[in-house]
Length: 200
Image 1 (cartoon, rainbow, N blue to C red):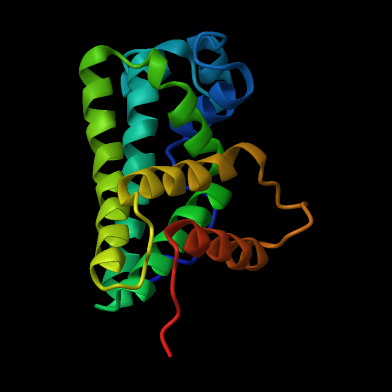
Image 2: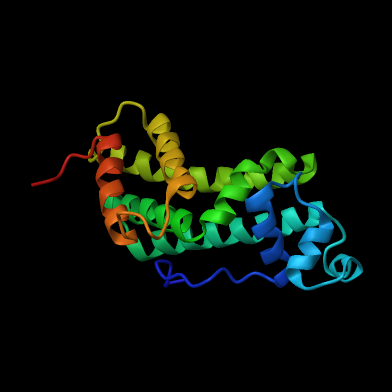
């Protein structure tokens, strides 16, 4: 995915798009299958033909969300090459853009982890851990190269993840900053967090 910076509308099947809208508005437990079916233009039996339960809708939505997030992060790293700072910036930018352009999906995933069946929750957490390891590795590489001075690389990486994920809870397209401005400002904050030391 060399176009990791480019976003269109979410490419979701109608039942998942309807579930996303309902979960974002009412929460998982406040949403009925009948409401999702109505939003999707389906009967309840028609919805069940595609997704046999409300839990399967949450899981299907979460899998597509995490798959896109991980694909974009890996593409950003692949485009960045070997320079630790370029890789760090690309990964942070990718996370920021995802949580702007897929804010409803990211918000539902982070808030409804409590509603996932235990078996699927383990799978979802494994996806999330994979993303966190990318950040951990990016910060560690910068420290190893003498470019980042933080004495707490793992804590810094977790703080970065929290900063990027948090964008989904407050970003609005009508806000004061456009996406490029928001990325630029938050990259300054991200570099400050890891103690970036510019080279001569």
